[in-house]
Image 1 (tube, rainbow, N blue to C red):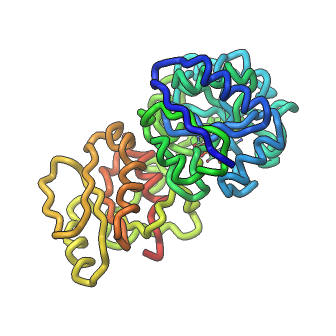
Image 2 (cartoon, rainbow, N blue to C red; image 1 turned 90 degrees about the horizontal axis):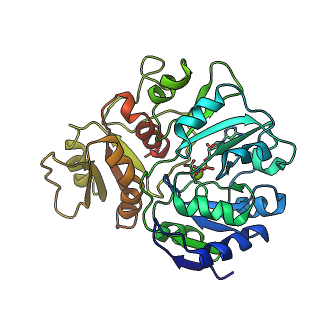
Amino acid sequence: MNTKVIAMEAAGVEPAALALAGQILRGGGLVAFPTETVYGLGANALDAAAVERIFAAKGRPATNPVIVHIADLPDVRRVAGDWPAVAEPLAARFWPGPLTLVLPKAAAVPDVVTAGGPTVGVRMPDHPVALELIRAAGVPVAAPSANRSTRVSPTHAAHVLADLAGRIDLVLDAGPTPGGLESTVIDLTVSPPRVLRPGLIAPAEIEEVIGELLVPGRLGHRAAPSPSTEPVRSPGLVERHYAPSIPMECIAADGAHRIGELCRQGVRVGWLAFAGANRDAPAGVPLIELPADPAGYAAGLYAALRALESQAVDRLIVELPPASEAWLAVHDRLRRASTPEA
Ligand code: TXA
Ligand code: MG
């Protein structure tokens, strides 16, 4: 299959391109598109065969459900069988935006979308291209992140093509996605609602709207990953999901001596650090520095991991951010990406 790429302005609505993309989705094809978080790989959520193509293109296990994207609030009724009282103020406050609500599913949603389960994850993305694409398609759009399964999510169209060229019909390239990390996923079918995946919206922001939230991994509930010169180990607990193709090890912010140690062992190291701390990378060690604030760091993280992977290195060394709740989603992704056996 030849993958077509159409470049467009992030803010601009280009009717001809969007009409084509909508037609592909209605016909059962696959379209990658930008959201405010990462690029998604879209298919008609009400067409089981189309959604199966997403799983085939990504090499995604059938046990992992996909999020359904809508552009207009009334469309929630097409995919969710119930709209609990807590959903209303959350949608009013955070949609469009990076919050996915897990709700009882409607009968029209095929099992492949929900991995056979009784619930469906729904969100309204905050990106004009995504919203206009969904409207052009005229159907809810099932879309996981547009990467091969186990790879880091794509924040640039080039990342989508590196993983999926030849396997999907179209990429709408509107430049880098601003958020850089995926949406926060919360389960509204339990009480209190529970965070299933930390993301761009912090638990405290959600609690301002609906009160108590169950947050696994929250400081005080379970220890945040402890800075160490050893790789982070969470055997059995962590789905190794957001993974770079090179072994990755997390170190404390003051653990830079680990770099020299590995270099002396002949390990070719790539280093991901925080900007502002006057680094001294040994000769030949590629160094990428990311902003020391959570939003700036999130925006650049996946592109930095992909850039370091493309260097001739054997090991990625990543400095852990502070152990505070503002960094919860970043910690979660780093934990999943780090390799216990590295
Ligand atoms: O920001 C995002 O959420 C991006 C953009 C494209 O919208 N999408 C994304 O999708 O990250 P994906 O498939 O890579 O991750 C979806 C997450 C998975 O952890 C999945 O298990 C969870 O949401 N999920 C989806 N539907 C669910 C459901 N019905 N119940 C529980 N978890 C669900
Ligand atoms: Mg994903």
